[in-house]
Length: 159
Image 1 (cartoon, rainbow, N blue to C red):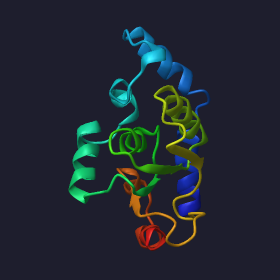
Image 2: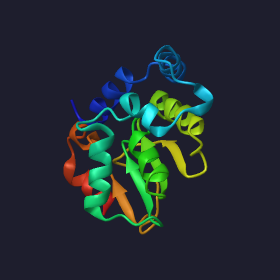
Image 3: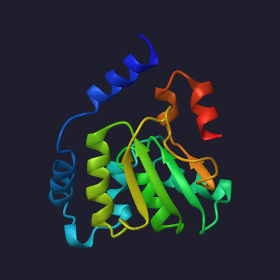
């Protein structure tokens, strides 16, 4: 199986339609008020990586990312790290993920917490980043790199 086949298999697994509404429904069932959601409310569902939101905050602080930074979040999933970078640290974030359904859900969740103008979301391939060199101050990825076998190509694209 080559990289293209692997990416298609991952996308097929993650391509369940309409992920945003079941997430919102589960938040309501947990007692959350949709018109008053915070990024902390979303963290249990949109920060599905080791350490959750605490790990995201710790990594941002460790990397000393400035509040004025423009950040590319590669493999951003449901948008948790992008929302944290934008909402807690004031960064302007562009998130890209291979899964259309995850990006759609991320858009719904990001809009719900009022960060739609500060955290863009796009469907795209981490190995074919559609951005000019120097377009971002920081390239961010949490957990997504483990799903990509061609690490050399991935990190050359980041560079």
